[in-house]
Image (cartoon, rainbow, N blue to C red; front, side, top):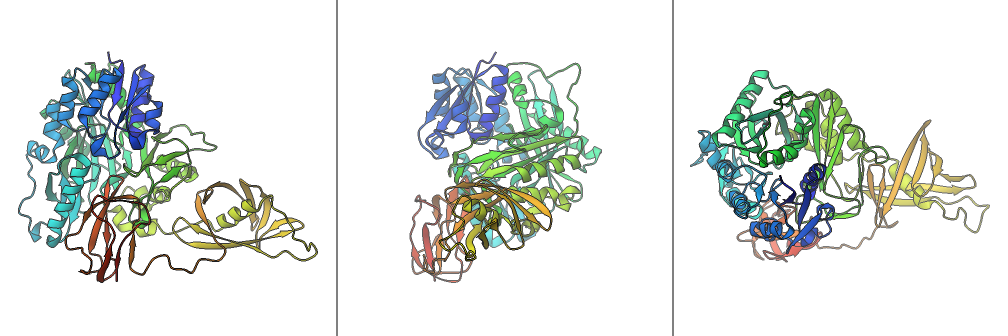
Length: 622
């Protein structure tokens, strides 16, 4: 029996695995980088071992350090979570060779399926070679890993070499393996996957379907089970293909077989992920199981058979939304800072059948070195329509105090007619992102913030018999829009034109507009104010007219590392609008910094490998 498990991962998935281990009475061991020294997963584990450094390549991708940590902490098993080394056969062998139990598939199965090129060969498919105009569009993909890293859509043949280079660099950084390949890109397809679970006694379960079509940068945003609108014949076909793939490599443990289903209803095999998926909670909710507990059972040699329910039967519908610290309206730019408060439900009490998986606690910093996902919010309901309504409502009412997030995008996506009618595909955000990210601040939030700030201050000046002058406050919303609001001190209290102020204190404002009363919860953190779901930054009464940077200045949109400077990007070189000048790596993704206009590169202030903070002057184009 397994008594102690080291999780070779961080954040949300480490905390989720620890939760099951505690329920099973299994001790837990965490590993942490220097950036994660005080991270939640390191705090909640029974023991934690430091991996010196901050970059993934120096810490969470160092298999020999993790094995050494497991032995030092007295663990007898290792769970890889997802990402990092979860699909690394060499790491799996190192764990087994050290006398530890590997909670995952056999190394040979990982080798057969973890490389997408080898997996395709196993399924009788071949990558594209010698791409021509007739083959476009195509998709460049990393052979190892997942999560959308090392993946590029190519629509112009002239872009092929550049995108191949970018994909190789990103894959090498994320997975330690720069191999990439090319395949046809299916336009308008749906991303459908099948969860499989196999034991060492010959049993293989196909646990329904999941739809993961809503993606940004080829990373999933909203997932659900079962996949809606899929004919029973196609479901049966996908189940059969998934089980066949698992049996072909003598698979054991949890895995996922992924497909792209075209508009013609034809399924195209994508890959088999030999690990637990980020979206596994929707399968758990629908089938009423704990996949981590079953992984541990299989690793101990136990059987999956249950005489009463073999395999388990699906009940109801589950949807998961990934809450990211990012700004969808600004090219999905990741955000850092402090997550002051994260709570789902009224007064922080979660409703039944709402699950929050997170690797953060209130007050935790969001590091720049890793994925920007803050949490996963999962709901389960009898029907899809009920699940959509419940999840959208939970997100809308959630308390999220900290950096900009994709919360509003998630709510609008769930309520979009294309999603509610199950007509979405992987191009959803390509078509709808502008409308889904249109600013829609609460018009009364700035007034509520100003009134809360004014609470307790003196009502009157020296001349009490004169009418008070209006007090004017200026705020910027998260989208950069500026708003001005005004109120007055009177003998009756605080007033504002057209609005009745019913109640005001430092944390709660009640306003009545046209006979309707609304409550505004107000919370201030340093230079930011959160009013219900609106985030405001106070601005000076009179804006500073002094220019902070010369025209043509390119500023770092996020903290990160300069991983590449474009060939030929030297001071004095001519550049075209949109031409890439350099690439920043932040939160496991590369972000292209392009020339804003056609002109001359008059200054370049950074070099490859340099760390930059948000707002750092990178270059100037005039």
